[in-house]
Length: 142
Image (tube, rainbow, N blue to C red):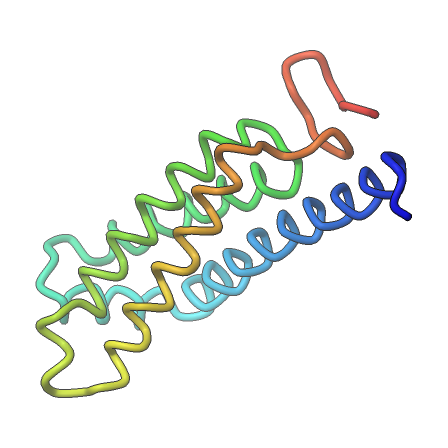
């Protein structure tokens, strides 16, 4: 039989794990950008966007901000919504229908972005949880 306190324990752990996963996905993304910002700019230019170096740096800054929000819980719901929009944009801009004819794997990459967006939207609705989350009054505790 499950008690309320048991449920609170596993849900808190699941929320924290989800926040860590969101954070680490963006840590990996920004790491690759910062290791080769020129390569990232070339990729952006190949997709037809102007000012690719500026856009690469702006993407890196956005991802750093998202990491901070996901790991601290500060502005978590807002960050999850921004991240969902960003990931949706990336899906269409870099893996959308125009890419499918030349490389069928692009369709898989496109669909993967939607599963991530679904998780981000769910997280935006439910928030960062009550543990290890910063709000305007400081660190939240149960």
